[in-house]
Length: 193
Ligand SMILES: Cc1ncc(COP(=O)(O)O)c(C=O)c1O
Image (cartoon, rainbow, N blue to C red; front, top):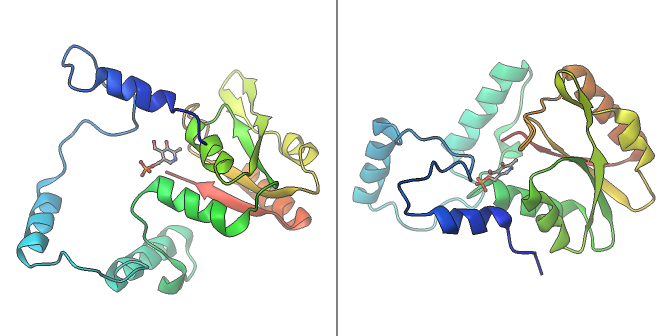
């Protein structure tokens, strides 16, 4: 069973109170832009309330592929993109797909507690790899990751930009993590929320 989430506990205690500033969840404080509200209303009015493509509507998957092509300068097939209901759902699916009960996943820490809970309910052991504190903030030493690898390690969970530290992996660190994963045959779950 997953432990009670401290985030939810704080959320529930503060919900509905206008004398506290809600910093418990990572969401903006601006209302949803009008064009998005309009599209949602239009969609309801059009009767688009039935089952749709399970992997995401084709136009959206194509738009995601084009976005990645623009940002990373290489071609991606739309078939490689899957749309889920939330970030957490993607994480659960990724864990289900690549790690079995009794295996381990490396998680740079401090970390967002839901990651450890998501691994825990699958019987997968989260192995914390402490980020190092440096004057500029935090740093991941890839040697620390490597020395935590065991025969049971299935994956590295990389959350960058990180909640809660704000740590952002440099391109060099990302390349080192990729090299490590290839060397040891590990998956990378990249949570770039
Ligand atoms: C690091 C990180 N990953 C995933 C999520 C989950 O996103 P969602 O609310 O879409 O499930 C959050 C939400 O705060 C988060 O901080």
